[in-house]
Every structure is written in C-alpha cells, then in structure tokens.
Image 1 (cartoon, rainbow, N blue to C red):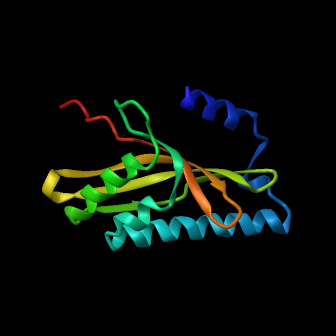
Image 2 (spheres, helix red, strand yellow; image 1 turned 30 degrees about the vertical axis):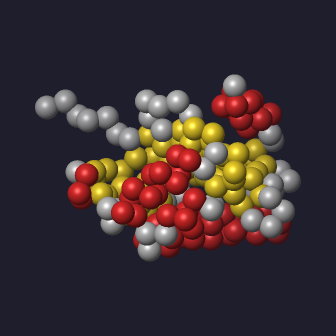
Image 3 (cartoon, rainbow, N blue to C red; image 1 turned 90 degrees about the vertical axis):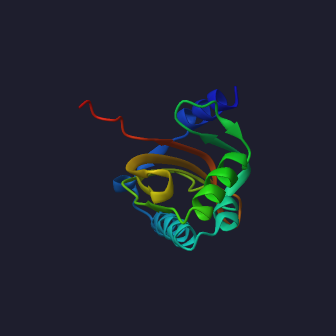
Amino acid sequence: MKLLSLITLAASLSIAPMSALANDHQTSVVTELHAFNDRFNKLAASGDAAGLTALYAEDSLWIAPGESPISGRTGAKATFGFMSSQNGQNVHSVEHLYISEDGTMAVMIGDAEILVESAGMDFTGTYQFVLRHDGSNWKIISDMYTVPKEEDE
C-alpha cells in the first residue's frame, strides 16, 4: 500500500526534466542534488555504512529485485553494512534528474556500479532514488535498484 501511495504521489507531482528548469532556484536544487550524489559516493568509498543509512528518511522504502519493499532504513542498513564489511564498492552516476516545480522533491536515476569480490558480485545496475527535501537536507524516501539479467550462454 505504501508503494502504491508513493507511486500515486510521484505521478501527481508536476515534475519537470532538468532541461526545462530555467530559474536560479531550480539551478541551485540541481547543484544540491549532484552534491548529494557526490556525498553518497564518498560515503560508499569510505565504507561508512552509518553515514549512507543516514541519507535515508526514517520512513523510506527499500525496493530490491525479487523482494517485497522494506519500510524504514532496515534495507539500507543491512546492504551497506554488508558492503562495508566486505570492502565492497558502490559508485552511482546521475543519468536523469527530475525535480518538482517547488524544488522539494526529485527523482534521480543512474547507474550503480557494484563490486564485492568476496561475494562474486561485479555488475552495473540501475538505481532510482525518490528524494524529499526535509527543510534542511535531502533524504531518500525510496530506493529501487535493478540488476542486469544474466545473458544466455
């Protein structure tokens, strides 16, 4: 139900692609969101699982392939804790960025390059963050990622 509500909310927002953003406020928001992604990458590179988990809202949704969505920070905490303990790498790029007209919500889509040698993980998948500005910081309210299908041999 929470996932359906989130999808309904996103569909009801007036979201403009980055190319349609013209004013200084929107340009500032774009800069903030790229800085958010840079922060994510720095925390991931340093193995700071607690720092990564803190980027998520307490009521966020973690949506992983083949799993039921997890409400709260539990999915992020478990995933980033595992990656940190295994010296894993997780690097995000920003390929698409959509921002609400009032600049308080955004959708960020890009590549997630994942490498955890000890677990035999080495792939590039796609992530989608839905973010909300809480008045002082951006927080991830939904994180969905997909992994590539294994090619037939």
